[in-house]
Amino acid sequence: MRKALSMIAAGLAGMALASLINLPPFASAQQAPAQLRVAAVPGERGGQDPFGPYEPVAAWPKDLTTLPGHEGWTFGSGSSVFAESPNRVYVLQRGELPNIQRPPVRRIATSLVFPIGRLPWRDATTASPPGNGGTGAIAEQGMQAWEKGGNQLGVDARWEHCILVFDGQGNLIDSWNQYDKMLQRPHAVAISPYDPQKHVWIVEDHKHAIFKITNDGKQIVQTIGTYGMPGNDETHFNRPTFMDWFPDGSFVVADGYNGTRIVKFDKDGKYVTSWGQRGEPGKETRPGYMNNVHGIAVDPMTRQVFVNDRANRRIQVFDENGTYLREWSVGTLPADVHTIHIYSDGALWAADRGTNKMVKYDLSGNLMYTWGTWGDFPGGMWGVHDFSVDQDGNVYVAEVDNGGAQKYRPRKGANTAFMLGKPFRSAWK
Image (cartoon, rainbow, N blue to C red):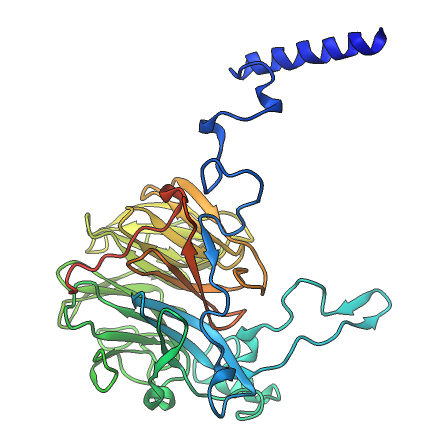
């Protein structure tokens, strides 16, 4: 009798709770209404959506160990990635690292073991030349510090294959080794969506220059900045990071790790203007003051410029001439946004190295969606530094900590509202 009364009471309580949140009786024990579900694939049961609306493409790209003469070497710190097409993807990295297999677990103290199960064990950022890069210091000292730390080129790393090109199956179809010697810390690779000749741009932060290269990689047609010389004027950068374009072909450069400004050029690479002042890292709230300007995106519809003021964990928005418009925070620690892009979905997507997530904001800064999980398994992220989308909707990430790059393809039936928009390619055939 008591058991029956208990069951009736529980049922009545459930009905009361359901009425409070406007659900039919017993709905909470059966199925939530569609408007309350947030699964990346509508109607899917089970799972956890660790990769959101995507699934990782295992073994993309094929490891460098598959190349003749590279059996003992693998990808170094992955700085940047750019998908010209689903069958031509550029990857930028800081040399190669020894292909060391995960060591067996061993005890290093009474209560300490290494490596810890399921967690990454080698940080490609510090392992790859020039280590952490000497942020805030003289760039040229970065390589010296890496070598003084006991590292040796040819043994602990090789400075080869800094610019790679892969096809859709992950095969290496080109490598621009002819440029390895001029690079010290290659930071970004991109192509203007408004350039019918599809010149490839390389941002080299330790040599304070950006290079415009023919699409076949055979010729540097323009160098902006004074190679090897930092500065803060019309002809110098101080560790530039990323760049983006306006529809008329003019462009802006984030300058940068040591610089604290945005520099605008016309379509021919002639200096137009710059803005930004050095702030107080981690504490700055004043408009236009910046520290570690690490990411930039242009909205082609409004020509507004979105700046990742990384050290102050905020996105600042300006008009195309540098007038401050608005800003938003990317969150408290561990938030650490590295790169931002605007695609055809009209949203700003950010890669957060601190939370290992891809983050979607509308252009007013409202948080829309996040996906991603930490790890060194296929699909797991560690240190996403740049990302790109191809015309088929595949997403690529370059990871400074895991090393190399990864590819994700859309899941069948995935909600497009959760997916990165297709790229702008207005001038391309």
